[in-house]
Image (cartoon, rainbow, N blue to C red; front, side, top):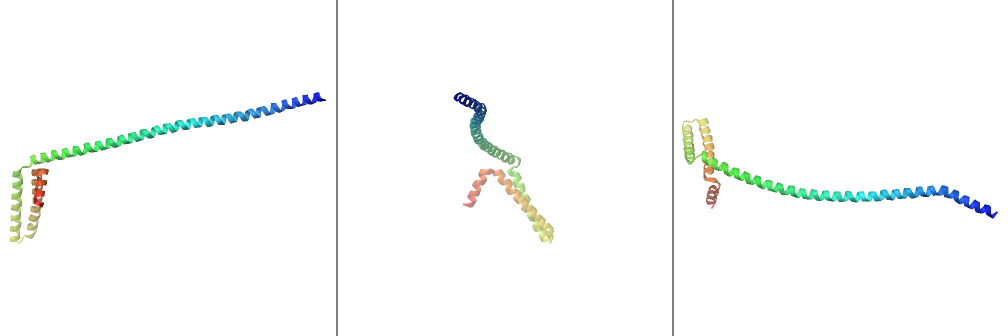
Length: 163
């Protein structure tokens, strides 16, 4: 009887092992697979974070470079505009002379005389028109004198007039 019991015990242990072993190995395989996925996810996440950090440093570097280039471009643009203004002023002075300014001043005097004459004969509409044209020519004469003097001379005369 004892022999049957041992055989029964061995048979039952074998049966349990036949059913339990696949379940235990399935559970272990799932656990290993999950651990492998977790490890792979951690490695991939770490690689992505490093890549993102490198991209951020590239963005910062390129942003600084862009800001420097914009500042240099703005400086070059300002220098170009100042040079263009200087050249325009120079050419404007060459196109018109002091003799032209004198002729313009004479035209203003003549228009004022005409306005006074029209007022004397009670031609008020002609009087007003002559005054308006004299005022416009006066402004034009002032701009011409200012252009002929150049920016430095005009600033000096302005400072002398205010002092």
